[in-house]
Amino acid sequence: MSNTTTQMTVTELDKLTADLNRNYGDLDSHALLEVMIGQIFKDKIALVSSFGTEAALLLSLVSEINPHTPVIFLDTLKHFPETLEYRDRLIKKLGLSDVRSIKPEPSAIRAADPAGILFETNIDGCCYLRKVVPLEEALSGFTAWINGRKRLHGGGRAELETLEHDGRRVKINAIADWTQERIDQYWKDKDLPEHPLVPFGYFSVGCNTPLCTAPSDPNNPGKRSGRWAGIAKTECGIHNRPNTLDEPGGI
Ligand code: SF4
Image 1 (cartoon, rainbow, N blue to C red):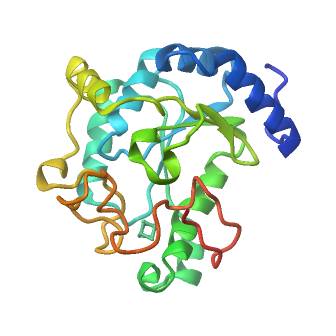
Image 2: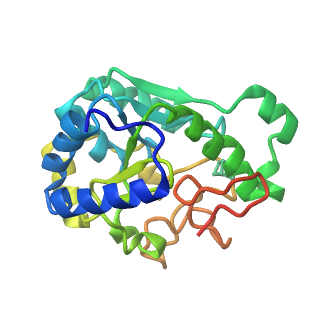
């Protein structure tokens, strides 16, 4: 697919993802990533990683295939220092050579969230400002992106297809079908380090605000129960992209 352009129509993306699912959707994660990174989307593909509690798994898989694959980390300026330290540790351990820490534009922050508390009044708007817009700019020039969502996370993720698109690019859900047992085994086999907040009960880690990340609810087995707990929001918007600061981004 050397002639794949960075801008395809939705109809073209529908057809492309249907073809890809038919031809490659049953491949195991490693083989799928090898084909997508090395052939189909060569030099036009990036991994988007939160460097959260399960991120090391996909980062490790991709690093085995090509450690020079671009990795996009959205530095919202609201992360726990532990996440930033973990990012740096994983970069070193896995030999990742092209991790891009993308920050929101200072002028956009000054205009829309000068006090840094937009999450209190417009939580979807805050994700739009600090994640959705920076990601779209960071993905400019790429035709496909890899992410680590899994069906076991439940909610809107329970029915994930291996390959889908977001209206602009192909999205590769390379580990969508991994079970907790398989994750745990891989982690052990590769001797991957734990995110420093896991021992404190955080099984999913996002931004460091009381509304956005809390220790997981011991009465709710869902790993993401500490994310936007008590709010009707389960995604930050990068997977269900709103088009403005005021359009709800959650699903
Ligand atoms: S997770 Fe919270 S602080 Fe981070 S961008 Fe979204 S609303 Fe803002």
